[in-house]
Structures are given as structure tokens and as C-alpha cells.
Image 1 (tube, rainbow, N blue to C red):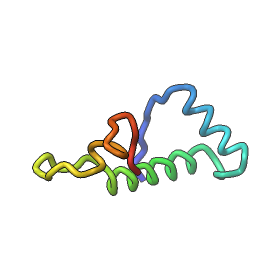
Image 2: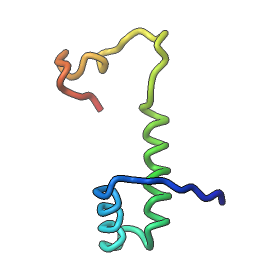
Image 3: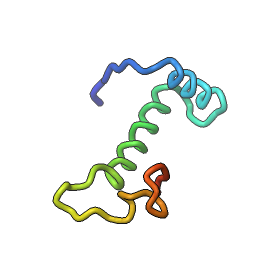
Image 4: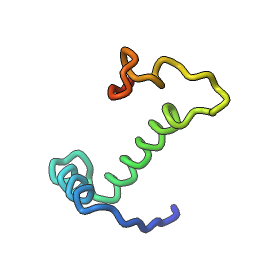
Length: 71
């Protein structure tokens, strides 16, 4: 498996350490691998859309307000 080195903000490192402490993951490596994998899957299903597509309801936010999000 390839190794990757990254720098992350301290608050993210603390959250990962807390998840490991709480038993959500066996260790830091497993936590980072699983969280990264989950994030990539979420990005793949809701990531950037082609600009050629017509804008949908979600581009305007909920109820047409720009400051609300649609999930």
C-alpha cells in the first residue's frame, strides 16, 4: 500500500485522536484511511457537476435562499 504524508490542522488531529480514544477506530492509521475513503465516496456522489448541465433547484439553496444548503 502506498504511503502518503500530509499536514493537517491541529483541530483535525485532535478529532482523530478523540475518535481513536473513544474506540471508533483501532488506531490513527485506520481512522485516517477510513475517514479519507468515506470522504472520497461522498465527494464522488455529490462532487462538482459539469458546467454544461442546467442549474437545478439545489444551486439556489433551499426555498430559493442562497444561505441555506440542500443535502
